[in-house]
Amino acid sequence: MRGKLFVVGTPIGNLGDITYRAVETLSSVDFIAAEDTRVTQKLLYHFGIKKPLVSYHEHNRKTAGESIVARIAAGESCAVVTDAGMPCISDPGEDLVKSCAALGISVEAVPGPSAAVSALSVSGLDTAKFAFEGFLSTSPSSRARTLERAAEEQRTLIFYEAPHKLSATLSDLYSHFGDRKISICRELTKLHEEVIRTTLSEAAEIYRGEKPRGEFVLIVEGKKEEPPREETLSDAVAEAKRLSDGGLKPSDACREAAKRSRFTKSEIYSALLAEKES
Image (cartoon, rainbow, N blue to C red; front, side, top):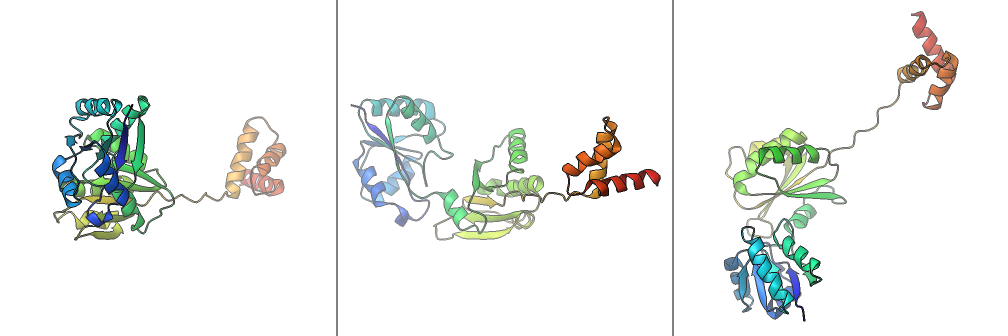
């Protein structure tokens, strides 16, 4: 009989945010795969849970992942957790889910807090449509490509950033996006929670001389849709000229141009004649 993998969300700061179901799941599984066993052990101790922990993180995801999946396939149940928030989002837990799915092993979500969605909800920016970018690459070329693409995105953008990289990231965002609105969310649900709603230019200045502390979620306004340029009579005349150069008689060219514009054939023809006479 095969076991099951539970994807369990844990608090991002305030332990009171854990769900009853998360506590029940962590108490009932055979073992727990944790990003940092020391962090998870503190959480388990707080809720009186005693379960075996195995380390599963970015640097051992392949070898540890194979062992974890083998145990689940053999019939054990496992909960995968990250240090804080919902695992498998910008997190190696994604590989566990893929491996289990490939083997037909059942995977069940136990929803919990998410820093990205929590920050978006208090950002004051558009929440109807958004794009999650996670952490930007440290590779200059990959980072530049990502930002060039994201600069054209009209949905609200969500980035994660570590304190020691924040100043450089804000400068890069301003350089690629221009001066858009941004909400800087720091230490969400914790004692020193802070939300700064400002612009990219001001944000870059704020943190240029200040040493940031804590973990950050950056919510950036999407690209504004540019209103369509209103067609002018000169545009319609230019279209008539193009058609005329293509072989149509001037009157026929003006008739075709009128079909594609808000101007009448006579208006275009008169302007075309006036242009020729001038």
